[in-house]
Image (cartoon, rainbow, N blue to C red; front, side):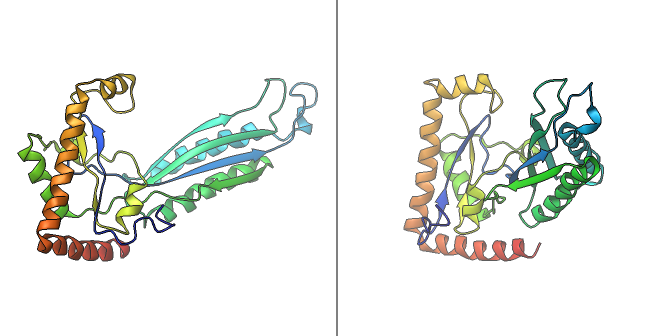
Length: 260
């Protein structure tokens, strides 16, 4: 949508995400998915293993390479992945394996550095085992969210007026969570991405949270956050000087971010 111009001409964009607390902002980091495929040569693992090229060895080395890399990674970088395909039968040397990884950094300017380091891990595993490797990064990466304090303050004021209790827990506010394509949008248009309480202390992406989100009681909190966002939009419409302040901050923050 962003690439096709869907957000052109907009003054601001808002999006809210359910959580177990009300927060004007929780750290959403830059992220890109990558699929790594190793191609070897099948052979009978007992009768003539020397005729095979073990793609599972390459996958295991790749996994261990990245585990070793974490020792020298910045504390706020994240690399996590799985082996999606590890072979067919124990008596067949695997000729194909596949891994999927997510690479995350606090800022989109750091992501290319981490990607280059990860790619070295992928390729060295292939070189050590004699396998061929395919590295497929997704077309789009997710950017970190560009924070606009003028918008956050306005939203928090409106949310508080509606009874929201915004968290002050530093462990929550500083904990880097997930990633979202909304981050890309915030580099094109000023925006906010608050989180809102739904009446449950369950953690996101669990069965308990799924049940809580579908509960009728959660509708009250969903409507409340919608009202807070709408009130923020009305404030910007009725007070052009506030919108100008938001746009000015956006220009300054974007410039600083691009220089990181």
